[in-house]
Amino acid sequence: MTKLGGSRRFGVSGLLARIAMTAAVVSVMGGIAVKDAAASGELNLYSSRHYDTDERLYSDFEEKTGITLNRIEGDADELIQRIKSEGRNSPADVLLTVDAGRIWRAEQMGIFQPVSTEFLEARIPSYLRHPDGLWYGFSQRARIIFYDKARVSPTQIQTYDDLADPALKGMVCTRSSSNIYMLSLMAAQIEHKGEQAAKDWAAGVYENRARDPQGGDTDQLRGIASGECGVAVANTYYFARAMRKEVKGLDENEVAKIGWVFPNQSTTGAHVNISGAGVVATAPNKENAIKFLEYLASDNAQAYFSAGNDEYPAVPGVELSSSVARLGLFRQDTMNLAKLGENQPLAQRLYDEVGYK
Image (tube, rainbow, N blue to C red; front, side):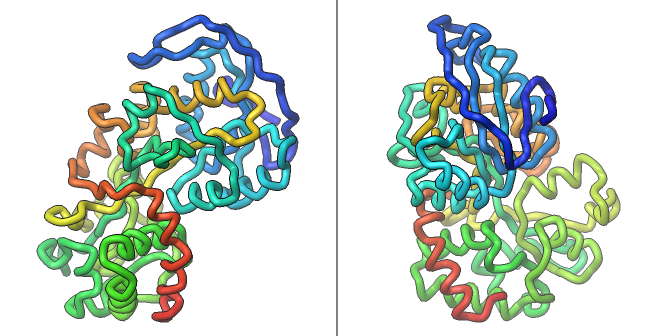
């Protein structure tokens, strides 16, 4: 067990349930009102976010509320199963994870309880939260199209449908179809286009592959820089990070080779995904858990998501970090992200039916 940035981060084993203590003192945090725990009480956070920059996010919460934040970190599916296995004795207060599809999996297993506060509903747009308040999105990343400036014109890739255009044969690089980000993108296609059209799209994208699907998002960007890929799909924060600091295989000259397009600007808007959180159904520290969700929607926390991990804030109007601002503003898909989870099983089946590895 180590103490980092004022909060304690634990391995996937070893956290005992704590007893919550609350007080009614009110303080202002990032321009919003929240109850102050008066230096008492704890919060047990299960998180699959693996970003060191989140340390400031957690320590700021502790400083502003006096609540001790204990963390268990691990793979999202592992944490979800852990909470389920722990049952009524689980110490977990909040589950924080990335991708609406994973949040849906937790939702389907009965992990969350509904939470509704005026503050959360005023701050988080309706399409970035569960209709019944089971979870809320707190940061965004758009999944957009990147391209080799020397080989591809941006006019060729104005929509996700263009990825299936035979003109791009031998040029498209993606992650595996089983990757959660690819499943969510396909789930959005199903919602907007219908099952058959989405299946045809997946077949066309796979037919255009430059190589078999492999690696993570940064590997897709490296593929463009090396000349192996002409076009790739990746989340915005990977590229914003590469513009901000050198990433292995993506130095300043290599980054300069890569252009980007926010697709579907005249139709549905660009596909977005989230980091989101919900209060666990058996949370022993429910009041502190709600305070944490409200903190994540505060101006301070929203700014940390952007500056620390190159993400777009979920709350409209929060200032973007310089790296994110360089990508530019865009019209985003406002389909409720709950649909990404609901369509996930069908998305995988359709990928499998067309042989998408």
